[in-house]
Image (cartoon, rainbow, N blue to C red):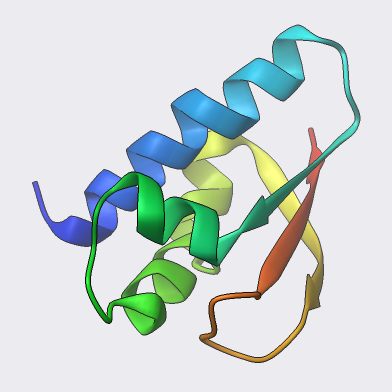
Length: 83
């Protein structure tokens, strides 16, 4: 499994699945939180690319509705609608 796959799997389990089980309609994911949780060093572009991909949306059955903050940064926040 690639690092991008690890990011997507972690976000699905930790953020999307939990939000879906609570009946929430949206979920926000901050790249810096994922980067820290996975103990990465200087891999913000990888994290943002994995979360921002169509593959992530398909895997998690979500639709990206917003990206807040700088592209590929520690404070980039992805907001998804849960389908």
